[in-house]
Length: 351
Image 1 (tube, rainbow, N blue to C red):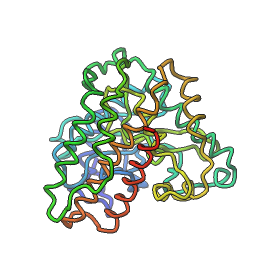
Image 2 (image 1 turned 30 degrees about the vertical axis):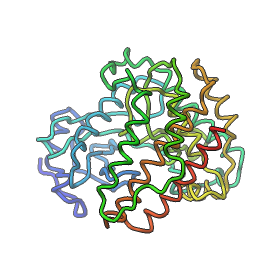
Image 3 (image 1 turned 135 degrees about the vertical axis):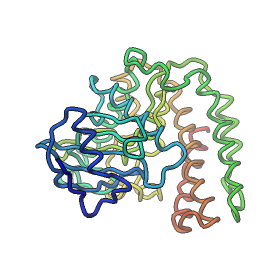
C-alpha cells in the first residue's frame, strides 16, 4: 500500500514509505501513519512519535547531518535497550531495530513511547507543590541507576559492549587530553578553570584499587530521566549514548555532582525543580543506593570528584567552540560558569 508522507517531516530525514515497507517486513501492524509528532530531547538525535495499525511508536535516528559516530551510537543504543528489555531497569522498551544504514540512510530503531515528564522542561502537580514527592523523585533516580549497575552484563550478552579493563586508569588522561584539544578552536584563550591539574592529580592518587565492572549509563542526571505524572517514580532513563561497560559508581557520582541545588547556576538546567529544590541530601542518596547494590561505597566522594572533573571538561567544550563561533556565546559563558561550580565542588570534596 502507498504511504502518505507527513507534510512537516523531511523525507530526507525519515521517509515514511521506506519505514512503512520495513515495518511490514518486520511483521508489525500495517496502515497509515497517524499523529506524527516530533519529540524534543537532550541531543540532536531525531525522535518522531506516531501510531500505525493501532500501535504507538517512537522512531529514533541520528541527526539530519550525521556526525562521524552517529550511526554507531544509535546501533549501540538499540543493542543495549534490547538487552535491557527483560530486566527491571526502567528504560524504553525496544520494538524493532534497523542496524543497516542503507534502508533509511541512517541506523534507526522503534521503541515504545514513555508516559512521563522531563523535569528539565516541566514540573507538574503534585510534584511542584510537595517537597516529599521531589525527595522521592531523587531517591527513585538513585534506585534506577543502582539496579542498572547490579545487572550481570555478561548474562545479557553485553560482554563486548565496553572495555572495562583499565577504565578508571583511562579517565584522567582521557579528559585532560580532551581539554587540551579545545585549543584548536580559534580565539579560545585556553581553559580558565582553577585547579584542573590539582583535581587530576588528586584523582590519580586516590583512585580505588578494587572495583567491579557493570553497565554505566554515563550521563544519568535528572534531565535524562522521565518521571511518572502520578507518582515520584522514574518512568524511564533515556539518552543512552554515553553508555558502556565501566564502573557504575561513576553514575552515582554523576547524580551527586549534578544534584540540583537551589541558588547555584547549574540549578537553572533543571527549571522549576532547580528553583524549588527538595531533592534528597547526598547522604540520603548514597544510603539509598546501598539498599539496591552490594558495591563498596566508601569511595563515593572520589567518583563524585571524577564526575565533576569529567562533566566540567565536557561543558567547557561548548565554551571553547563559542569563541570560534561554533556555539552561541551566551550559552558558552553559561556552561563555563557551571564548569567553575563543578570544580569548586570537586575541591570541597577533596578537602
